[in-house]
Image (tube, rainbow, N blue to C red):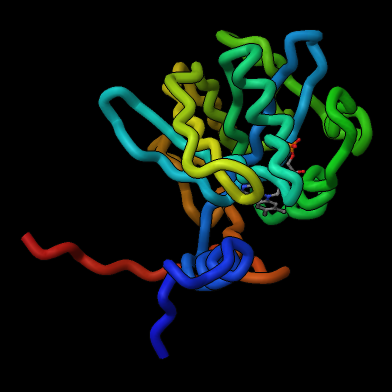
Length: 202
Ligand SMILES: Cc1cc2nc3c(=O)[nH]c(=O)nc-3n(C[C@H](O)[C@H](O)[C@H](O)COP(=O)(O)O)c2cc1C
């Protein structure tokens, strides 16, 4: 079977991509509007892309009417955001925050998600997230336009909060304690409970 993406409607291309590109890490992004309203939403088109400067990206797809996600609008207004990571224990509140609330209504308030202040930027962190990156907007690259066009948001990591509860005795991140989840296709997720190691060739 061969799929010619030049012939696929965007919605079908999207479905093939999200079912194939798996598992995807989840950025639970907190941002703040010019009026000071907080916002929280999950994005699995997310990745760390550079260490010098330390950079992450997340991608906000336009909705079916072509409207931008609140997270993208907010970082355009206040150029800062937090990427909170999502362990298994936070899967339900993370999912709740994917609800399309009216612009300006805070998912933190609506779903009673505890906040912790950030140290360098205005948007708060998710208090129970084991890891949170405070980011300064670096740039937004627009890909396409209209429905399913995407805003690729680049952020420079200013600092990283790490909970002691996910560290080894040596002070490194323990992947078992971190227990992050990943997004698969449809409603499927994966949990990082079955780990293996492979030594890299020298
Ligand atoms: C696990 C998960 C991953 C998601 N990943 C993305 C994504 O990468 N890009 C996107 O535009 N929407 C994604 N969504 C949908 C958004 O979270 C949803 O549209 C949300 O309402 C956007 O919120 P906002 O308008 O407050 O920014 C995802 C939803 C879930 C549950």
